[in-house]
Image (tube, rainbow, N blue to C red; front, top):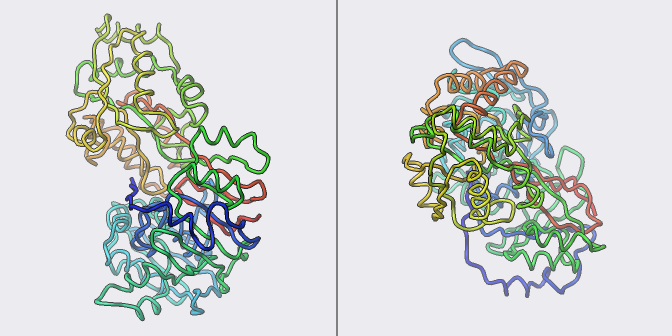
Amino acid sequence: MRKLMPVLLLLASLLTSPSIGPGLAAPAANTLVYVADISDMISLDPAVAYEFSGVLVAQNVYDTLVAFEGENLTTLKPRLAQSWTIRDAGSAWNVTFKLRPGVKFSTGRPVTAEAVAFSIDRVIGLNKSPAFLFKDVAGLKEGDTRAVDSSTVEVTLPKTASPQAFLSVLTFTVGAVVDPEEAKAHESGGDRGEAWLRNHSAGTGPYMLERWDTESRAVLVANPNYWGTKPKIARVVIQHVPESSTQKFMVESGDADIAANITPEQAREIAGKGNVKVQKGRLLQLVYIGMNAKHPPLDKAKVREAIRSSIDYDGIVRSLLRGEARKVQTIIPEGLFGFNASAPFQANVAKAKALLREAGVPRGFAVDLMVPTGPAPGGVRWADIAAKVQSDLAKAGIKVTIKETAQAQLLNIYRAQKGQMVMILWGPDFPDPDGNATPFSDYGAKSIAWRNAYEDAAAAKLAKQAALEPDSAKRRVLYKQLTDRILHQGPYVILYQPTTRFALRKSVAGFVWNPMAFAEFRTVSK
């Protein structure tokens, strides 16, 4: 999961900005001001950016071969590739793309198959944070992508990789196509142009990077060579404003058009005001409890089912989180291909007690629940959610001792299989169901199943079959079988899928949050 990398910044420097800040003139009609905490922005090179803010910029400056649009992460759309095919070549998968004709980089140079091969190899060769998506998930090495002719690209994947997952990976910033001539022209010490592309751009997206003022703002301007429908707004300013209260004030006063980090309380305050509106966005995170499947009596499937049957999920979502989440109980989040909407559990004390009797623990048992310190997704403290779970389980005779632990320490304990029950969250690194299915199902992957000492050969086999299945209909059936199995047999209590929220001026239209944590500004108007 991507993690923010905080950078110290004096808020005063923002408030005295000569162009944008609270109390100054409202943005011009052709300028969109988006305020957020962008302290994690360390590079705008798509082969390097793996933090939320860098990805936000790169997704607007570069195009990928294929894309998911808006909130839909289930249907691939053509971008630089107008078509693609997957062929079983016996010992490998061959994925072939036919490029859209007539596309130019912002530099004016044409997009070619050679440029695509250069861009993929560049990610692998630089080997920065997101490179594992090509190297580990797709099993690629330099040279596996080749230009068949000027408009045809062929990628050879090993049979151990999922072609569908590879296509999903291509929608992320690592799939961005970079002008190779521009990158080579600014190469320094064999860095393939990385130092220059940190704060410059050479893509085909609807915007170009005008400038990045480190620890202050990134400014995007419309790309005159853009191949698609021109952006509705010519200039986008992504302004660093770390305090949500300041963000809220800027939108209310008209100094900003969109605020990205509004708290649930602030959203409720805004709701009744005439000039501002609140819009929710999906996230792919799941907040869940992991149960150590080798710790008695959690090693019994019926005990785990009793725990799932004891919890008041509706109460958590509606009352505790005040609607800032969705009730999801399966391991693939809503929004991804393979999502299973089955949610059979709601507090049923009689059923839970019956399951405990069948499992041989009629009087219940005591168990520790580790939770992180601080706020959880959805705007409440982890400890408050834990207290609700503690109260619910007590009704079935299960005595829970809550142990608040700093997240770094908690993860160390959890990864060593030493937790009894652990409340934590998970979000996939790429928009494919295998980003959740393998971690939750396959003990050998040394991820979530490993942390919960959950060894289920049938589940691991289903996850692998689903990942490698090129036929979408068959793949969907396999994920349904897998998620149904883990829903009842696995060591997880999926509590909820959180949402996020934005404050927008009421004049703003066309803003859609992609659950992979970015928005395409080309569709926004005001």
